[in-house]
Image 1 (cartoon, one colour):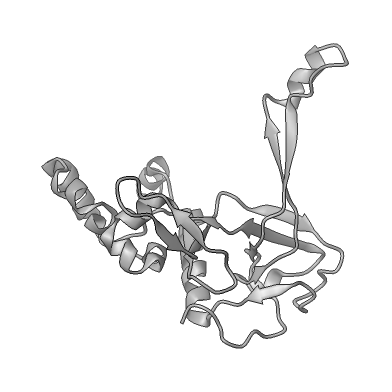
Image 2 (cartoon, helix red, strand yellow):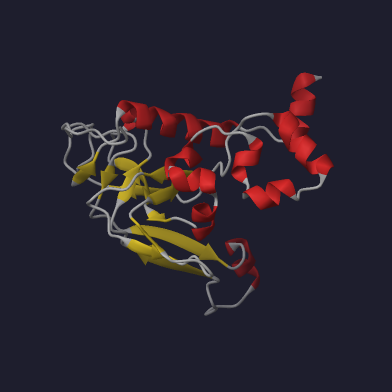
Amino acid sequence: MFYQEQIDSILRFGDVIKGFALSSVNIDESILMFQKREYPVDAGYSIDISIPTFCVILTPCCSISDKIISLTPLVKLRNTFFQNPYFRDDLTRINRIMQPKQVFLPDVWENMPPEDKEKRSMKGPGYAFYELFVYEEHKLFSEYIVNMKQKENIRTKYYMIDFRNIYKVNYEKIKNQENILPKCLQLSVYARDELREKISNYYSRKPDEDKILLES
């Protein structure tokens, strides 16, 4: 079960909510460069405001307080996911550890150079698409069409979140976990644990140069 049938009154990590505006800053160059220019001058940055239909809470359950919350919008899936038969059977498989060959389309894996295939196989099971987590279809979500190019298009209500796309929101009414937000869906304990495990993996990955130093 991906969603909890009964939604409780506590705000939780992974909850789907609505009614929030998100903002992001686009920077052309460092603001320090402005010191070398005469004003008025093009600021070199812009601010985008979006109001997604649904957002997901990515603040850990026990840290939802102090008028601050971290949110990420639910977005549509990539059409390439629907081309992979392993994903197509259950798109939430993207959330879990898988065998290296399951990441690729069957013909791509079969035609991969033997040395690349062996290198990937030696790494063993692991996460793919480290930054993504898929939310199962639900009647609350709007259906959209996935363009499959030379194949028949697919209608779906699957959505996903991207860990690279997290926003801090200041909200006066967030003082504790009390549910004062328009909470729409709550993950099951199992699904929330999958989200916790995958986002932990996303942030805990070590670059090769660090691994070398830490293991020496």
